[in-house]
Length: 246
Length: 99
Image (cartoon, rainbow over all chains, first blue to last red; front, side, top):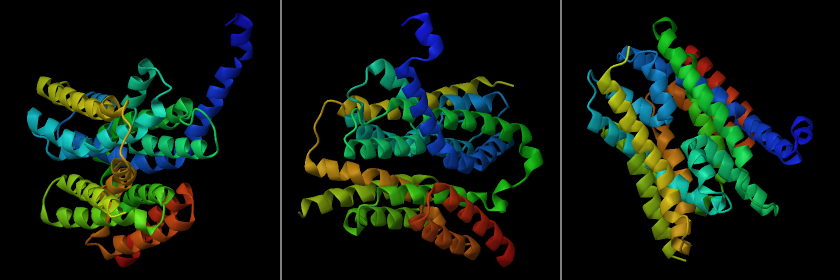
């Protein structure tokens, strides 16, 4: 690449920039949804005695909100490291499935790009990236998975998560209970729209119904974050059983 | 400001989480899945998403349940941003109205 190409903008770099912006635009509504969550998590963490340095250390290195909420619930001083690690594994075990679902779309990429990209894989960037890859595959675009689009969905999300959890830790005592303003509904709203995007008819959605019922029942009966694992597993088992009846 | 045990717990979390993120890719990268395994993989994301929000479906707060019904209806027709706005405003308004 010559100097003039850099200053004028390399066509490939420009295309990557456009793809990045397309991803960032797609993730904007989700960003809106996570800000209150980030503030709440930061505030809760501060209540448990984590400092404004330790909170971004956690949210920046771990970057998985569900496990962070669970860990903070169980936080003691000093924390039980093994318990925290086990709960983190439990809540984040869905990443195995998510990575496996994404794997066929990553074949054209070198590992030096895949491993950093997977660090940024969260529910939202994964769902947006995978949905986009499926749309592009259906319209004949190759490669179907656009790494720049994915980065565009993931990076703003990462920065917002780290910044707003830190703000939450700093402002926590001042904010009080953010949840009472109705912001808690942003999370289910985002997930319901993502589910609508994956909808392929009632027959294909039967495992979801199993997951919903089992997860809700487990949530009512068993304390802690077990309901996610129970709901997900029961849905997968029913998907496996239902696929066998054809 | 920085406690050694806290840092250790955070590093353990980060290590475990990164392993879950690369695990599926590393193990399944070069395999072709059976139709049955594919059916499971296709159902997986929806199963996980719905399980995470399942507690909202059995909320003990009637205002939140009504807001969830409105949000569900919005999600079937509208895109992300209007659905989130409708969800948050209806939850806020109903909580205020229904106490």
